[in-house]
Amino acid sequence: PKNADANSPGFKCTYTEFPDHPLRSKREPCGSELLVKVPVTDRYIWRPKM
Image (cartoon, rainbow, N blue to C red; front, side, top):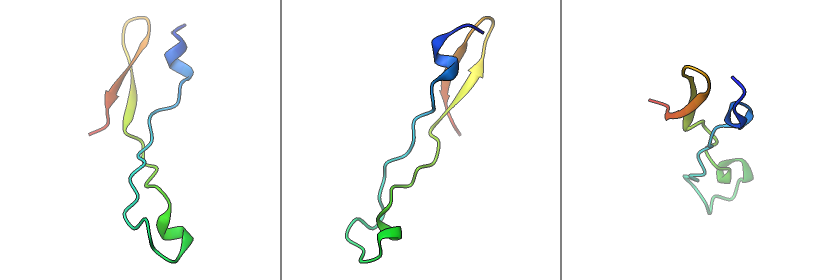
């Protein structure tokens, strides 16, 4: 697979459950992967992670 998408990172979740929480660790974004790289014939495509 010689596609440029093969080296791209997946999209990360930016949802913050407690944006005004006094503890900094609780204000961080979720950060979980939203997409997964799926190999097809000669390249990769991005699909939602389910």
